[in-house]
Image 1: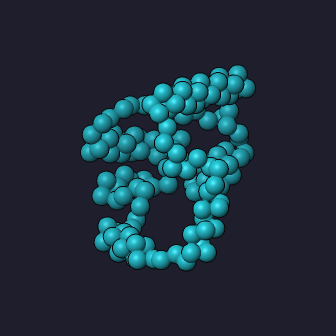
Image 2: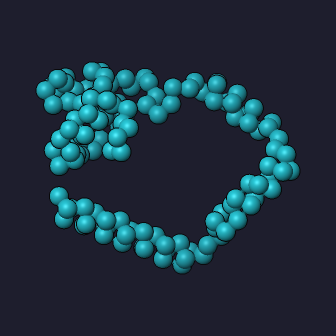
Length: 134
């Protein structure tokens, strides 16, 4: 966490005790959302207040976790954005800012595989270094 987590209680504990005081573990993998919601609610009922940093006491399957914007509003905003016209000056500034950043570059499957392998290796190395630091 970089000091700006939305859960103030969790952020304060992280700042006070440091990352070594926390353990993040996958308890169970459940593919079906209704079963996942039930399992999460069972855990919250059992643990809330003891060692739980959840803000809400109840799982809300009807609520969208990542967006509170109704679909109708999203559609209206999308349509409005499609009507927006940028000036030629703005378009040119955008082109200039993107120059040399490989935007829109088409890569071969071989190049994609090499990039993927390099990124995976980098990720493995970062995890190894982090585990050694703990």
